[in-house]
Length: 88
Image 1: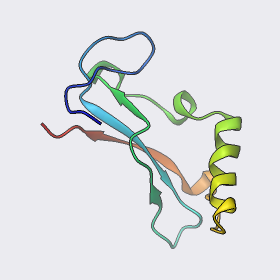
Image 2 (image 1 turned 60 degrees about the horizontal axis):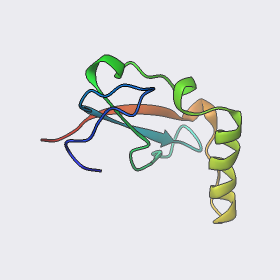
Image 3 (image 1 turned 90 degrees about the vertical axis):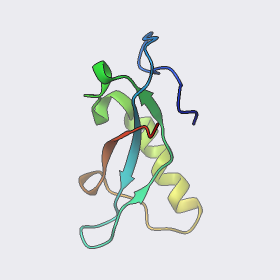
């Protein structure tokens, strides 16, 4: 993603300062798979939560993609989102 992109949250047009990524874990002992950025947000929207970026249908799609590749699918209890500052 470009460094000078706009916030993708709602109809916000401020400059994005953070990327939102999924950390998708299959269990407590294995490091999670990290997604590419799924959303870019400004400082005002950097309090985005899981429910803001992934509903039940989205979760089914994520797990089916892992299963389709023959990988152990992530479990919700070992998954979260991370808010990462965009490097300038």
